[in-house]
Image (tube, rainbow, N blue to C red):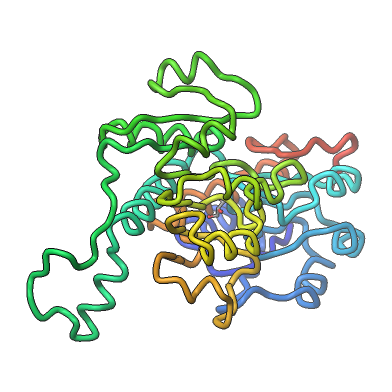
Length: 327
Ligand code: DGY
């Protein structure tokens, strides 16, 4: 019997699917991630791991997991896994594309609206007893309707955000690494350079994967190029933004605000300066967090494991081991 380590309790039928396929399953029961010692201990015997974005899988761990054949990440992003090192070790790495873009786009829009219209500040003030009368001047925000939205990265999530923006009558700009005129035309989006996007947008939303090419994509020069009223939305990865530069841009009023679902580190320590700004909204990395989407993500990860343990290629590989390990 193969043995699968699942690094946290997951929603949906993922564990059932693994058991129905005849695998032994050990689910880490803690509220917090297992931690490197426990991961190492469990992967010593494991044939497969169902991991989350909170589980770093690097060369050392892979070297200590002699039976491991697949690391199935329950996420579309897989920057927590060294996919090349896994391939070199004969281990498949997989992700969950195609199932979380609408849910993540919903959160990007929720953050955009919350920051633009002071939803969080208004809620906090109401709870604190601040609502004494209707005020013609309190909590005034900026209209998303009719504004210009800049989408950085036009993958699945960026495209889903663009579709929502049309319903808000927004002018939509997109900056992509590779020009995608067909996609832009279909979505009614204007393809521009990153600099032009930053200069023209009232809202800038990030939808690029995190890696060496996108690390600190938003730095001092980029914040300086933005409008003083513009709001940055980040549901991608914290590392795409130079957070010190963001703090400085907020401090000097170079931008109007930020709405962040991802930070560095996660969780963001409570004494971090980003919490000091009333025009910053922070959520705890919940972009894909709907019941249905998280269940589907976990089930997809399970399906990837089931395929590899049956000696097949996984449906959603992010690497290609030249010599995949076998049973
Ligand atoms: C992903 O899928 O990459 C998300 O960040 C996890 O929700």
